[in-house]
Image 1: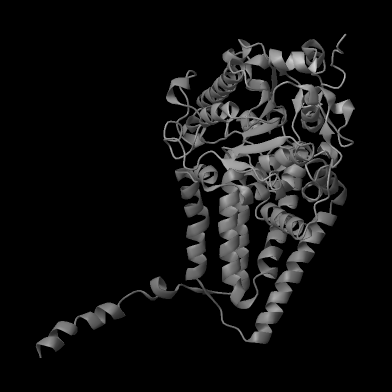
Image 2: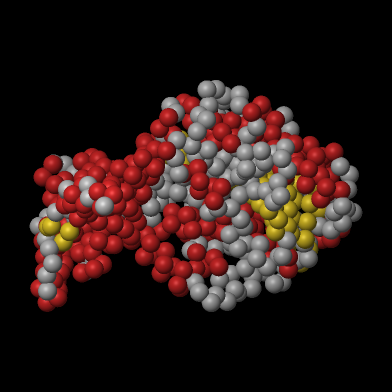
Length: 556
């Protein structure tokens, strides 16, 4: 009796729960697809609408082209989401559009094939700074909440044949609408698409989906690759062979340093005081191969040049490190970034500097580039053979610029102290970035001092960045812009050369001649110039691109 009295009130309370909260209203399948397509075009394409408004001469063309892409969105949602797949496809594309639109709208970053390649080859430490509170809020509002609404709503049940016919009708109707709208003013739209590729590059979810397809095709094409030998005829030249001590070239591959913010290049701020005091050669006019590490770094170590480089061609041919190895030079790769991108795969000497990580330089869980210095001193002290040592920096990699330098190098203030750029002014972001350049200056100068102070090897140091960085110019931040639209802030990089007195004497190099050749350079010059710096003779070396080829003073 007591048990029945205690249970009886529960039954009516359960029965009073509103039906809508449990299951949601019922709507036709096509209506759900149309609603999601409208939401994506309205909520996730702010950058697209802004660019369309700036490109087209009249609002009618804007709306007509926008309607065409709405029809294309409808086609994508319908074609890949028949029957039971409808809701999973809608949720996936809602979440995808929310993620990509955040980076497009807030940072101006296009998610194309190269950007997807960057994402696939990055590390947790690098990518975690992009997951900010602003990003999470954006994805929750524009991805998670509408996805929950999709799951909550119920679709009108239909028999298989009617469902199939309805799906086919939606696919054909949306495709026909897209084609009709484009063809109605084909001359205008085709011209815009040819001249303004960034317009379609800002369209969500089409741009990231297209980039993913192109990335997948690129990776499938590059499976089971046979690497062709390069420079197998490489030998040490007479100057290197005659050197009385081991010759060491330290090749520092910078990260995200742009030429415009290097004091040596005429920047208004003195961001490179230590290098200036050491009389280095600074090359001001240097162009990068790409705008992101995944493209630039393999390209600069290849002999293909920017015009001839592609991912597929690059991985099918040996690179600079292999040629040096063929010549009998010891080659090592030290990394404080996202790895060697396969460049050191065959030399067998790659070292990650953050494992286990010196607490003096790795207090934040990531290591600053000062971690290289003690290891460099130890390596030089025991060096017995001609060596090229590659140091791959973390440098100025954003958005967490404030983690790239110790507190004592925060000389440009106030500096942005977060990876959430929305919380900082453009000036604060620039201050933090300039502090990273100041610290790179210190690391390079300290390495030069270390090399100059020892008497065991004949040293030289060459520094070149992989790509530049946007700091808010024209609404762009970070890097990785498609090459066709990349600003010079992402494609102009610093390049610095230091030659010890011992090197100049042993190799008979005229530094004034080398400095005079510093115009119109690019990453294409790196491959032959490192071979020239080390005096490596090989058919793979193009002397017309070698900075050192015409600059040797013959002994009398």
